[in-house]
Length: 114
Length: 115
Figure (tube, rainbow over the protein chains, first blue to last red):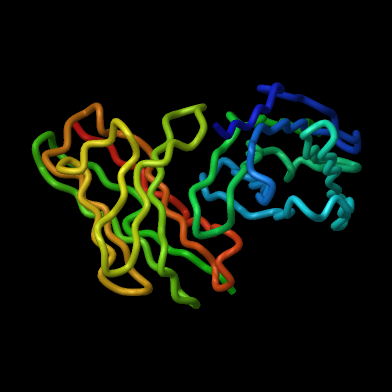
């Protein structure tokens, strides 16, 4: 069975701090995709990144970076120099691709205080 | 690209009425769409997978006669909550498999309140 664990329910930081959101997954599949989505208070899920199981290269996009480690089945997300606009619930998800259903973690609520 | 819309964004209805929610892929064709339900402060729960031109596949525990799904075209899927009751009040979100089929893109969601 597939499973995604986001152990951090809520995180609160002060603006400009760095913050890492943890994601641990379980799957028996050799080919899979990992995703991160952001859900601001408005409710819409915003796609942030997709990583396939064969690509362990870390990715950086502006203040966002992702660390994928198959050895520990983790796909952690770091926000550098956090901003108030980063306040949202962040979901990690696991799937076989866009046409297949996703398994979501329970989400981590990030609050960035000014 | 890969924009998904939902309509309506908010709906308030009386118990016993039916409510239809539309999910559209605006700039791409989506053979597969998904319907999720989200309760406050909880994660997304997949309700069903909708494939264009065929019957939807429902997750265990989801009543197919209660939540009717129609995917009549490559850009439109609808979810009808039949004979809605207060316990059906929730946030309903759809998603569509993107143009290359690798990523799901989500609509803005529909908040349903049944009185």
